[in-house]
Image 1: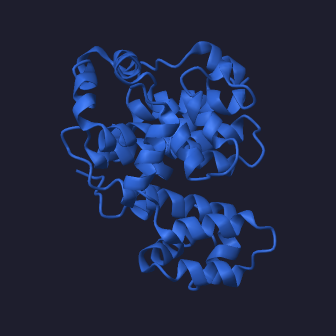
Image 2: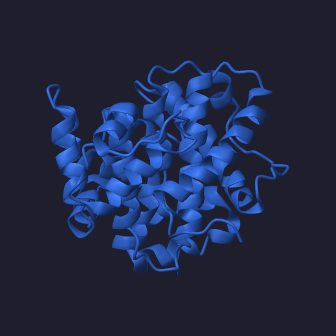
Image 3: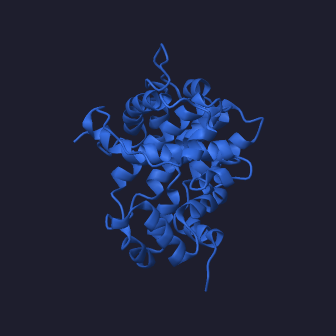
Length: 291
């Protein structure tokens, strides 16, 4: 029987549900009259998340002049939307922690995903996207559909992995052959089931064909470009900030839709490399990135 991305996403959500703290925070932030104190009370229910919020507020990511030592001050400074992104990020990392190394090295997966989130945010800023910070989450979760495949359909996904040596395009084609849809479509369905901020699901769904996105064409193009950049860049996080020479393979039509000069790429990549290194230590500190 053929299964839709939505059906498989519902199954994955049942098997790998987000922590209660993430769900409650998401609901609170959606309400316009939510107080800082209400958010503090929820964050403090999870010591790990509380510590991560403080680490982020005190990091160079925000570059604040004084030390932040309370959750309420941290939330006030970083903002409610950044708080939601941070909690969702750490929650997804925790939720999918047990995936077999047969399918993926999870350290490398999150290296790539955090790098993509940072590149996405930086490209969104350069492209003049309003509230560019929100794009970080789309980049971070751009391949969450892959984790959903690994976790819920390991037997079938072994057929897909037979194409691994033929490159990413071959793997995507194999996903569509075996399941009837690809990781981007499954990831979007999963994000909808988690009720992530509006429109990010469309950005994830159309990352492979950004110019076909109904409403978020430029945003989808940014994730498309950022995904390709991060695929090449992420290994260099382990090489102490030494950017390599890359044969980038993103669609030229996607890049042209951003209306940016080509020399912007080098600046974005250099800045993103440094920022990704630090952010990985904040979001996923148990995963060493220097070898």
